[in-house]
Image (cartoon, rainbow, N blue to C red; front, side):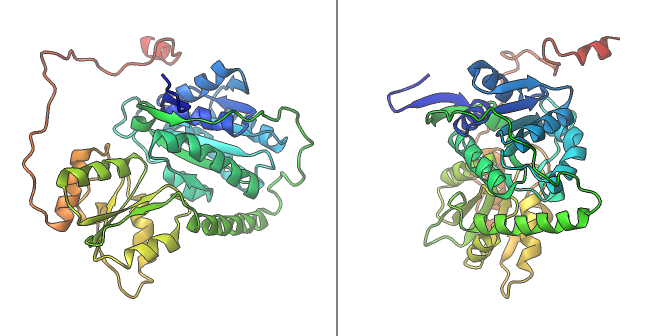
Length: 374
């Protein structure tokens, strides 16, 4: 579906793939896994980049690293559990560096475990590996953030993680697109110094220095938006699709009590931006899916402030950890934090007579099914 303004109806995964094409991606390797599979399938259909299915996510990341070292932009999509498989190589690649090609890892988390055996929060891998992390919250951002991620990877020679979640990956919205960039497909000579031994300590220090420079870039970034009202006394800090649920919840409450700081550059956090914001408010409320990643980082940093506002989130019981965020959950979190009167609202429930029970199953053709049949 399209209109006359160069806008197309896309899923979040299609938007992520489109962003890669506009970035000039020349190589993609992946292992299929919901909710990430459609990113690779979309790139296959275009026929622009070299795309291949790998034995597993670790092998895929190794192939993408090789392409990036050779000067070719590489995309490595995977689901959350796939990052567990790839983590052994990721926590060495961060020190080795990615060369001048550029390497972006798109990780699609699955809150509620709709098609996964857990609902892990993959943001912690960015912190463990000390690599930049970005969290788009809309379909347009999903497309636009990929070129930004590639630019960071190229400038600092580090892998960059872009995190999506099921509701962003598998829902649809209008996306403005640009023309694809012709990919580089001719390999260059590999850069020197790809071995981490015998001096991993020096490379670790180099990585920390890169992260400081990325942090400075994030602090100046226009990606992190704050919506304020002069009457607001409570700041809501959120990221990813949760920030959109927050906006809808505030509309439902019809209150000017809240300002919203929406974080896209989730690691390293834009500390100056956050600290400048929270000092202006009496209360700070954190709304995140899964674990209190941003909440814990901000709480730790706020100990350096002379005046610390009251903070509400998972650590104070206003937010239950785990599960998907919804508008109703976001509304309940906000009302509990500021003491607003609960709005009586009928919450719709599915009609059991109209919906047949459909238990979770593996995708048609998935080779994992054979093991369970045996």
